[in-house]
Amino acid sequence: DTGVSQNPRHKITKRGQNVTFRCDPISEHNRLYWYRQTLGQGPEFLTYFQNEAQLEKSRLLSDRFSAERPKGSFSTLEIQRTEQGDSAMYLCASSSWTGGDNEQYFGPGTRLTVT
Amino acid sequence: GQNIDQPTEMTATEGAIVQINCTYQTSGFNGLFWYQQHAGEAPTFLSYNVLDGLEEKGRFSSFLSRSKGYSYLLLKELQMKDSASYLCAVMDSNYQLIWGAGTKLIIKP
Image (tube, one colour):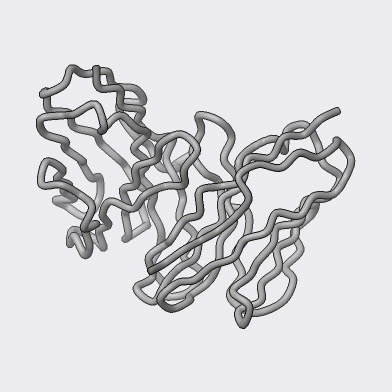
C-alpha cells in the first residue's frame, strides 16, 4: 500500500519547543495539503503545495508555522515556540491536480500535545 | 464569508436509513465532497458531486442542488461500523476545500 504516510504519529512536547512533522504523499500526486483539526471540528486549511511551490498559506497561520516541500515529494511542517493552543491533529493530504475531481487522500495524521 | 452548515449529531438505528444534510455558501463552486471520519482516524473519501442530482454508490448516496446550496448524504441499511463523523466539504473558486464541522452519527442496535 503506497498511501499517504505521516511521521511521527504522536508527539508530546513542552511549550516553547520546536517540532517538525513529515508527510510523504502518494508518489504520483503533485498537490500536497496541510490541515489542522481539533476535536469536534472539520479540518482547518493551513497551506498547500503544487510540486515544490507553496501556492497558498492560510491568513490564520502565524509566522511560527513554516512548511517546505523542497523536491516536490515529501513535505515538512515546522512549528516554532509551540503553545498549548497548537495541540491538535495535523493532517496531510495529497491529490493529483487535474482541475476536476480532485479527491484528497489523507494520511493518518500526527497528534501533537503541547504541555 | 464562506460557510458550511451540517447538524452536529444524529442518532439512528441499525438497519435503518439516515439522511445527513449540508448547506453551503462559498465563493464559487467546483464540487462537493463527503468524507467519513472514524474517531482518531483520518478522513476517507465517500463521494463527489459537481452536477445536480443523485450519485449512488452501494449503501451510500449523495445528492446536490447547486441552486439551493444544498446537499445530503443518504446511508441505507445502517451498520454499527457506520458510527463515525461525516464531513461535508465544498471546493471553492480557488479549488480549495472548505470544510464543515462534521456530523457525528451514532448507530444504536
